[in-house]
Length: 101
Image 1 (tube, rainbow, N blue to C red):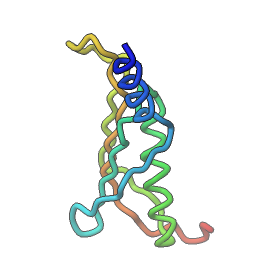
Image 2 (image 1 turned 60 degrees about the vertical axis):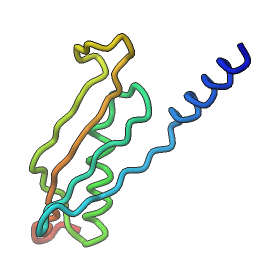
Image 3 (image 1 turned 180 degrees about the horizontal axis):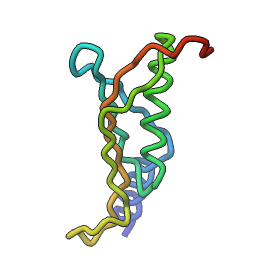
Image 4 (image 1 turned 60 degrees about the horizontal axis):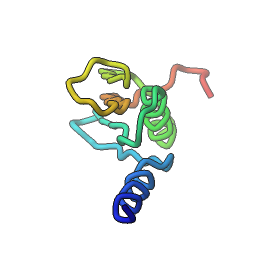
């Protein structure tokens, strides 16, 4: 029983709210960011867009979405376990329009 409780604590620790997502260069001026799987959430699309926006802002540019693919936790699944929300964003950093801060 103690081993079961210890195992559940390890799993729960792995589902903490600390999230990191790497920006991966895919091609010239094309990048990808995938939300890490950290539990059942519904805001992963916002999270990956925010990460892309931060990345582009570092280059004084803005995000242009190429593809945003989201998997919701309430989507049908064959597993008995709840599915984790996940988002995969393919994007470009483009010049801001003139006069935009």
